[in-house]
Length: 535
Image (cartoon, rainbow, N blue to C red):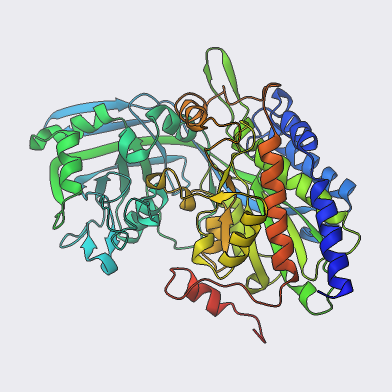
């Protein structure tokens, strides 16, 4: 190692040591406070949040990297708030059973109209997946144009990693894919029948997310869109399937069966969906620290964390503020501390670093999607994306989860850094949840950027397991007003995860090698297509 490189290494180590759990705590406490009213998109609390983030970037000395030399990147969305008088009816002959919005179904129109109304034949399409590489097509042999498709989220179960990723959920299992594919097939509506095993969370979580205003990307002229993207409870699903003499569990078993064929339900579904429509001007917050290398400074490491949560919603035990302390005040707080530490480096790394706090993650990764389409530097010049989303306050762990990193050429670097931190790289403990496709790094992966989230493992250094905290959080606090900050929280684990991610970023920022996806990966083609000149 040359003297110059040794200086860089020593400087970097000193700054990493200066990453502070106390500062991460202070940011988390403020971002999760009632003052910010749950950091709702298009709401007062959200606006206060982005101003706070920008102020912290400015104090740290980051260069404004947004629109018009500001820290802000405008993300134009359309807010669709379905009125509580909305109804969904199951029609068979002269019989009509009406489902109540918020109790038996939730959803919104993607057509961004104030008075959407339709009645159409319903057909069950299993998991709603068309995957020729797995010889699986739930739409095989049927034309669903103008019809209502009814389906389950998730995908056919398997232990074979070559079939839908085995236990690991692929993008085919995500609800976002279900709606996208239904629209591509020309369906008028797509209704997901909720069960906790297929969704991975309770209907209460769905209701809290979908029973309020839905921030959507503005429709392009002529773009296909569903009149309804919705969910029903399992009980309402029983009513949908009753006309053909099947239960929800029986239909779920059919959906998992190879050779599945679509099943007409012998009913029509009628919907009245009055809604309030409004333009939403929300913002990503972006700061940059320029690299020192005259050539490589045009390339960048990008750290991300979403700032939004659910805002003010239906009260639970008298509390209507969905603070989102774990999800994702913690990730935002780490992002701010990383930005401060990186900007304070006396000797900057060769590549630049972008610090990006995105909006509308809870609405379908909207802010990250917008950035992927409108990056501040060419998307092919983003070396890697390291994301932080929902960090748990149970102290330091023996292990770390970096699902997705193993699919990239930076994997040896990640392994080396983990060894230095004496961290075991653990597999995703809940691969069936499809976490890789549920956070903002996925939006950058889709456009080719090697991307993954840094997550804490479950084996605590104190000798206990974090499983109990996770299970309690997922069942009682996830997307609930009870996701609140507590003074008893231990931030030592978050501090270590911040240092870990920063070290990976510094390593990649100083390497000559250009990161990419391994051959055969689903994102490799997008990376190759955006490859910068000379790479």
